[in-house]
Amino acid sequence: MTTPGSPPPTAIDWRSLLQAGRDLLNPQQMGHAATNEHVRRAISNGYYALFHALAASNANALIGSPNDAETTAAWSRAYRGLDHTTARRELQRHRQEFSVETRNFADTFGDMQELRHLADYDHNAAFSINQASVALDRAEAATNRYSQVALGEKVYIATLTLIRSR
Image (cartoon, rainbow, N blue to C red; front, side, top):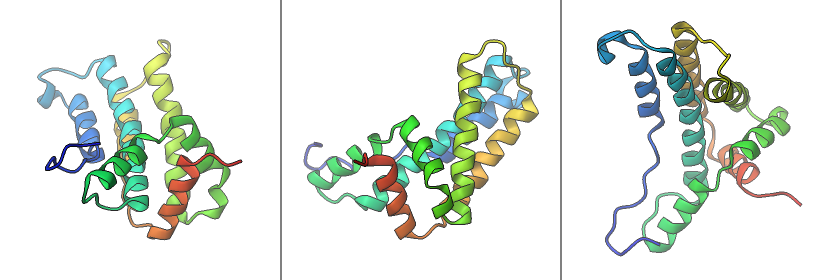
């Protein structure tokens, strides 16, 4: 738990992750042309923007704004409880139950996770600056659309992606 008087937890800002990815692709920002490693990192940032947006959505949907030590601890636990594999599996398993916006987010989440795995772990995979830029734009669009989804659906998504079914 946090100490009394400490600030409430904050999510990793998914928009900042996308901007950092775009900065890696921008020669004016970097002072030189983007390297293969910059392109790979930009793709990875696109996926992590989706992941942290979902983690924050889950915590906000289930806990709301923390206002004391207990809700702060609960919010942090909900945020940190999201697992990459479980999130992807459950988003795909229940895809047909979701709104168009959430289906788009689920599809983008899965596609970006695959792309991130290639970018992070497959030394033979090659990516262009344009591919990375398109991936960042797609992640942003999907997350913006998901942010408009009704709270009830977000609560359902949170329970699917955080709580194991028996």
